Length: 148
Ligand code: ZN
Image 1 (cartoon, rainbow, N blue to C red):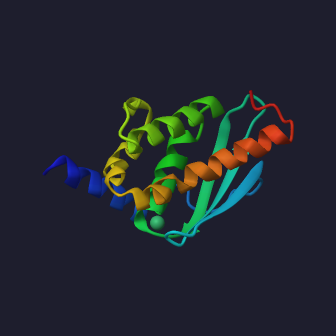
Image 2 (image 1 turned 180 degrees about the vertical axis):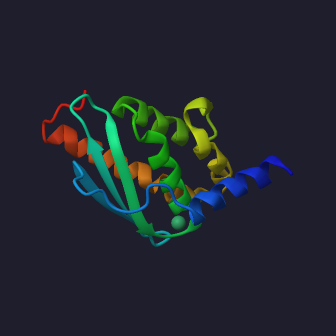
């Protein structure tokens, strides 16, 4: 089995069995985003604590396998992590898709989406959940909460 096949299986597994799918009961904040170029829709709930840790996260949405698999992988990856680390996951993933040197160790299953870099139109699908996360973080900063 080639690496491509392994990666495809990882992506399909997240698409068919999404981790942390649904809504949180008491999210700190929620962001809804739409990717018009593909029609993907995503809703991200985040529960942050005073120490700047993503205590919990969940997503719901409708869209292509890439957008939904990326959401499942990302949410699974950042739960329990500091916001700073979650931001590093985002930056490393964007590096990966731009074919720059990326911190692969931090990416976990997200690395399986590397092939998306060959399809620029699909990059927006793969990064939709992270754009939602970044919007949420911008809002936290704008509201003057201190996520550290
Ligand atoms: Zn899509």
